[in-house]
Length: 218
DNA sequence: AAGTGTGTCAACCGCGAGCGC
DNA sequence: AGCGCTCGCGGTTGACACACT
Image (cartoon, rainbow, N blue to C red; front, top):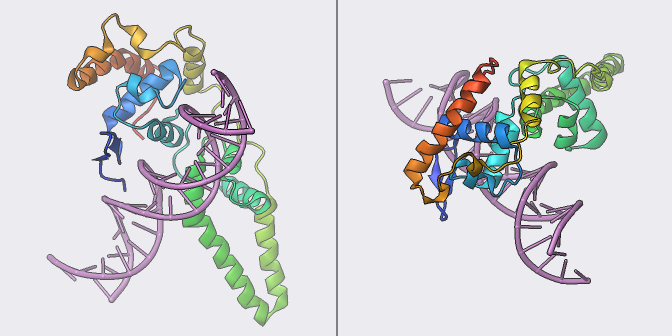
């Protein structure tokens, strides 16, 4: 379910991300942060636009991203917040730690919207038959919409990922450009050797991350 | 088995806000 | 004030997976 890789007129790769690209981006950002999305792909050895890198990191690679099924509480929060503020996906995402605006947007369009429409339709039908059962239906919808989750933050606190991020973020190399890791002239490398070169540097970083049992395979 | 329709979701696009010069 | 740049947001697209005929 991904776009086939293509190249634009500037030679920038588009479409699905490979594992190697993910590893490069993840390792670079965990080490140096995203100090400038436009410049980042150049330093990270990626033939991607900054925009594409940012999207990949924000929506997929961030260590605190939660993948998988939504809980009833999360669904309720989405429904309720959307009722209050409209399609403010970033705002909704802020209420659901680990979920991204893009994911929530997709989830709304593919699951929740239909669910709500279905409920509304059945409620309308029942209204024609009996106003009493209709009221109950609406109450159920309202109840779902007004039930909020107050316990979204417990999952990540104290996790290995968190301590890892805190650890890395406090190191003094955090803001240093990637090229400073080497005395070699990064830009003098060919694209092929550049790739090998970055992988060589990222290997220890990835091993360091794996030591914390961080699972990047999902 | 093959063709077609539908669902899903990663990725792209365009726009506006914010900031520095 | 005006320009250029970066970033983030929301809407949309595209391609794969699966269901259906």
